[in-house]
Image 1 (cartoon, helix red, strand yellow):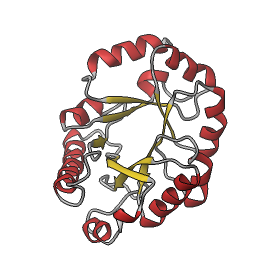
Image 2 (tube, helix red, strand yellow):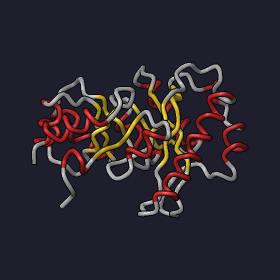
Image 3 (spheres, helix red, strand yellow):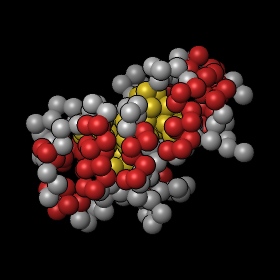
Image 4 (tube, one colour):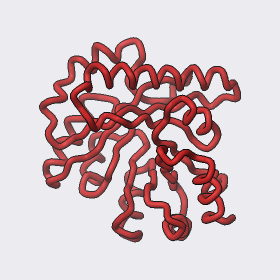
Length: 221
């Protein structure tokens, strides 16, 4: 497995406007270092304990993205150094991130996660209630959070039309929020969707961040 070659091929294929996040969960430090040496700086982790253990062992200029489901009692562990939290799905979590970011004199970038997939195991704001829920959240009170956009995960299926429909749904939510609730927030620019199996379609639908694991590091054993 040649991580540098994989990254080079990916960079040639992905438009420069799109940020590649190397999904490094369960991968050993050596592979992350190899990706770093090949120029990769944004890494995505799913598990708090694993991220906390890896972070001090790797270069300090890595931009860490927490992309998994985050429990409020774990926020304090990553608040000192995490750059982005992708899967924000409740007011309770927003308040805790704001609280822990303030303790660390930081502002943490956050993405609002939406449940676009046809799978109950996925997390996120529900499509039928998100407008009411978001309009009730006092975003102006949060001084240590920067709401930068939205995130979603498509269904793990072969049906390309279904995946396309789910990506369209998330893009429509992004557009609606950017011209509505977050119209005065210049930092609201990120649409995080697409993984190794579906990123070309996600990019075609407007994604600005793709989360790539197996196409960089190989399939999980």
